[in-house]
Image (cartoon, rainbow, N blue to C red):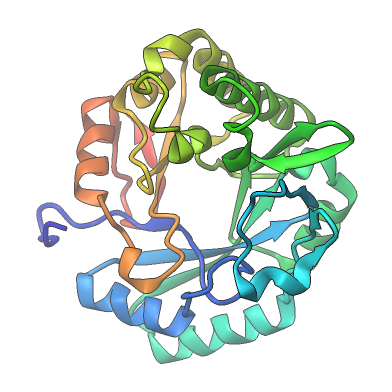
Length: 284
């Protein structure tokens, strides 16, 4: 990753996970903060998972040993976020790293389908950043993670179904700041399918982006699998007002990965940094 400079500092990382996210088996809040200081990152938000949707497993799914206590029959039920433990660790890191702006946060999985539980957590947590995301889609009488659906549906159908569910989220749930990884299915794009090309889904993306813009939310440029520049450009064309940058790091080494390239993409698509390094980037 290119080193930041005074002229081109790294933007804040608004989507980071630590040991307080159930799926971040290599996560560490303190080591991630150490990494942030080492690379010159001005700010980060620990947006730990609050996943309320039990996920149906397939017989051929491989489950890490650490997750086996979460499995009952064919269903994996994510644990609740340990809010007290998370906040205590957050305050400890703020004391240890006073020069680093550390924001509290949460990533709500399918909150439109669990609105009462999501509202209760938000009221208690008082988070600085709230992300909303879709990881699981309806299947049969339950839900399954997108990563497993490519074994059941055509690749194009998985992307379109995910965007339809994302549109439903935006329409039904308002209490969030940022839409996380609009292109989540691309992470698991099957090797035997035709190459992924966002142009084939332009109308679907634009429909979601228009709704997101009307709702006054920000779009996340997630660098886990870099969001295609075309989607960022469509966001600007559809009236999008703001973007954030997200490594979606589940371990310290992944913090702010690809941010130099992502910030260049955002700038070329019509967004610019705010007055403070911790601000959302706004449209020019």
